[in-house]
Image (cartoon, rainbow, N blue to C red; front, side, top):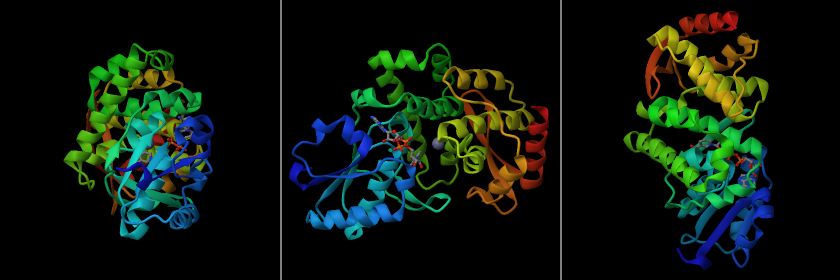
Length: 316
Ligand SMILES: NC(=O)c1ccc[n+]([C@@H]2O[C@H](COP(=O)([O-])OP(=O)(O)OC[C@H]3O[C@@H](n4cnc5c(N)ncnc54)[C@H](O)[C@@H]3O)[C@@H](O)[C@H]2O)c1
Ligand SMILES: [Zn+2]
């Protein structure tokens, strides 16, 4: 990758906090936030690429959280029918989740990630010192996915998390680096087994079926919605697999600043779930835990799932 053939894409928060890294390079800056993960931003980026004289050999490098990496991978996949790209993730969520796996895309109206491609970045570059400027609430959001990874794949990581805290990982860069590495291995191993979401990759949806529905209705931060979704998935696991450790999971979520209260209006939430991408005909492929560190997929008929959700809501 030659420096003068690269164009960096970043958002305003990253740029404001890390200006010195952008000295002397060509870069495109967009406003921060999920609302800009839309086609009009892509159009603006493409205009700027054209005015930079970008060509098929230009490498695009996304420096940012999941919004920036999703956008960069998408633009790079469609600009001139595809140019090389790589990522420098700057948020916990970006490092452990969004930058890994090759899903790149944008939102359309209320539909998140409705348009996109699966294409792997040429490289990922990690620098944990970039996290020094990450706001506290984004640490919490990112840890929802860390807890998800531990719950579905790694009981010993789960125990480590029980003995630590965000404050600890923020202070101890070595421990943080090791934590991120473990999470990268968990996600990339799953993706390598199943890049195009046959079965294994679905495990990553743990907490996300209910979580996305809750996010959609209540406009919560993603990590908060997923936390509620994880609790729901644990309660469903109790019914489906006789899972017994819901309390440990909910305690851990709370320990990392995440909410576990399930909002009341299950009617609305179920309505959204019916439209979920993961629904196949009248059966939902739900990710449940057999035990901590071991998730499986259970096909649950929609009617049974609705009953389960209402019984959870009543039992609150
Ligand atoms: N492609 C995938 O497989 C995948 C997986 C999970 C999530 N995602 C996507 O990722 C997005 C969420 O990612 P996110 O939580 O990183 O959101 P984000 O990119 O919006 O970042 C969150 C906020 O933190 C700021 N920020 C990021 N890094 C910073 C830093 N080092 N210093 C200061 N501020 C910083 C951003 O400017 C933003 O305001 C969603 O759009 C989601 O759909 C994609
Ligand atoms: Zn998520």
